[in-house]
Length: 313
Ligand code: APR
Image 1 (cartoon, rainbow, N blue to C red):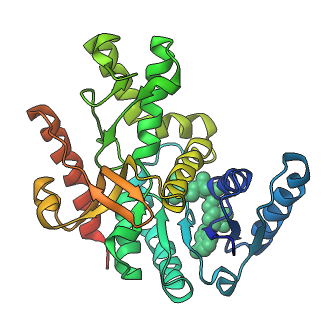
Image 2 (spheres, helix red, strand yellow):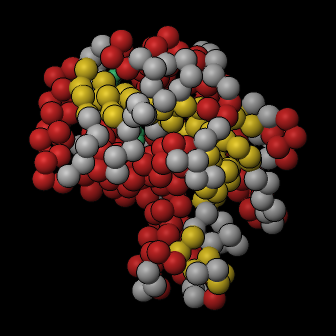
């Protein structure tokens, strides 16, 4: 049986880290493509030279030519510019729009049946761009943000409570910006509401840290943005699709119809709970929110809408 094929566009920090993680799990053969062909080839070769030690059989190749990406099952878009200190994700809008538009045109041409996972920021607007430019079904174009934001929240809860990260299920929805919506009510430790372990005040502090979790890393790194946790988050999504796990996770997807009306976000890509499996987005789950959460949600949707309205697609 032929192996599955995954293309990662952008062999930078996130792309290369993801290539190594995917190879170690032997998920598929991997093609790294970058505008800087040498970087894609060099990192792919470096990963392959680790394979005898780490013991994986996936083949990782680097290229600058989209013909080599043909017929990919999954394409991950990490190409673009990362943040520098003082920048918000939204400051990247127009520069990264051009990149994601060009990349999406190539995906449409060479891998018309692929699932597309978008990582480039500003995430929700770039997911919308990829959806519109490829013209792919909405179930197959998915933005990665909620898994990462939820993982950050979960880690902070683990650090504060001293309970294993394995027991913590945290949930963050909304746009991937500073007004994302971490949900206390749907966050549990081994099924027990997190509010049994942490006071309102303690939780609010962790929520604030989660909202600015990406910025905290940018401040420390100074020359780029987070990449280990983002790559791990993409790995989870790729595996959910390729191995038909039907996992419930938070991701940015196009909302329309009844569920679009429910979330008051019709015509936008925003982070919501989905079931992710072999058909991509198999279901969008309607969460019940309280008044305060709906207020936060609407603020977050408004921020996404403001960006999307500026896009020439
Ligand atoms: N086509 C292909 N590759 C491109 C293009 C393009 N048009 N433009 C830029 N790239 C490549 C760069 O050459 C670089 O190798 O994308 C890569 C981006 O890597 P990094 O600068 O290391 O950025 P990274 O940290 O991986 O983040 C990528 O994800 O989280 C977001 O905000 C982040 O938008 C950024 C993206």
